[in-house]
Image 1: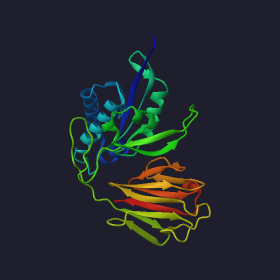
Image 2: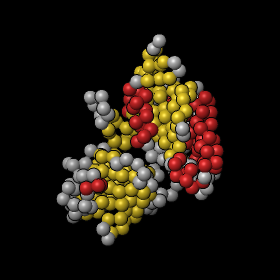
Image 3: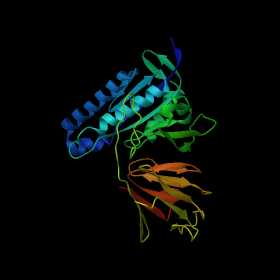
Image 4: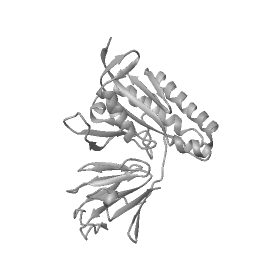
Length: 294
């Protein structure tokens, strides 16, 4: 018998587990991933969630409300962040969750909410928590303070685009992390290095933003014809550098190891190492900006 319910579905997996097996060896990597799986399960139980199943290095859980899922996701990230490196590799995890209707059958759950949560986890980068605007709107006011809009995606079967949000689990200065019933302060000194043709620009210290496009008055002049005159802007927000698209043809962002994302009048938090293409995918672009978050 099928039962329809409302719940938050959360997927969490270990980022780069294949590379970990290659660098650390089967036994060491397996033990490290098992430890992560135990953390995922413990944090789920601590906040009143239910583990549905484990698939390799991934755990799927449900929670009674959106704030519980967000709190568990933050706790998972904090716990994994505190682990020591394994064979010189810092373990990180990717998390995605969504609140909505689902069907429960024989201990498993199914439906569009499950599919969307899995898609969000797939879009997340190492150390990132992704959710939807609908889910953020259901969170408590204090938990909503930890969210930030990123960009929109088209999802098969949905008439309108899904607005994606990131849950910030660590901040700088005297900002506190929003974690269930505890706060921690972490500080990061962050710089963004951009390489384009023979130019290199570093955003750090007092320099917190730059404009990109074909306009010769911009900070970084892009000569690609598919770029708009005022194509976009990068600005520092807390310890993140956010790329905002202002163009007619879109901005294509590739974070190394992740799927390319297209921005259309939307924003994206730059992470790690990657490339920015203007008006067309990186594969066909003649001009790209390479970025390094340091």
